[in-house]
Length: 279
Ligand code: DHB
Ligand code: FE
Image (cartoon, rainbow, N blue to C red; front, top):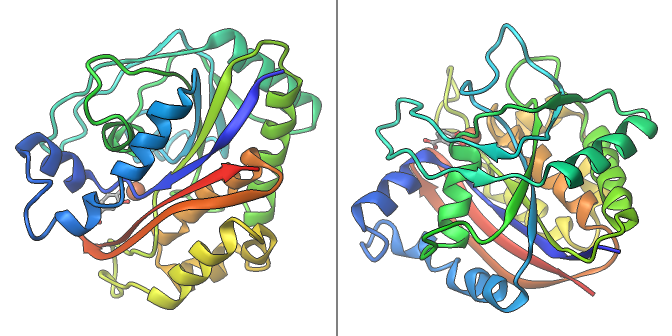
């Protein structure tokens, strides 16, 4: 049986990738954000996961508005990054875990999740920025990856409760896997932010705190709202919390909070990181 080690949750703002490329981690603007990561990186080097299951949203690199799956699961031997236009260096590719992916997919379809399967899939800043934060010194990424993309972009969006249920189904599938791989679950995006429209720049500290306080002990508190309610509370891109909710479901069971950081703003975003270890 595969072992689920815990969940790592982080914002994925592209400007973070720019700061890493320019070595600005210790600058006054960036330090309060980057300070959240040594504890997580150390935990990862101690726990040594083999596989990362990453819940994220694609921002137009792999899926555009003409074709937008609600839930898409990668089943590729390799995932490439590409230029999204943010001026970021293209990161080296991630290794897939196709047999493990197909096991998850079989389980999810068996549990009535009508997912899209991707044997070719580019991964954008929502995967690559977190990887650079979690493994800052990696010459080669030390984990194989299963990317799971949730549509947080094109309405209608999935509901928070459906995302939590997706996560629970992924949890069950991981636990049924016969290999002895060590698995870390990653959720990316958020917290509150809105990039567009009249409310551009909108942030909500109180709602963010509620999310950070609830995710570990009581994720059900986060699914009482609809996705539209969350957009009102967290901004139109704050709905990326759906990725965190699904990831929390995939971690499953009881967790202990090992690390938390919250800093406003990074670019337009209330930026956070959280480490929840399985107990
Ligand atoms: C920003 C935040 C995001 O989540 C994203 O995907 C792109 C940009 C920002 O705050 O600049
Ligand atoms: Fe985003």
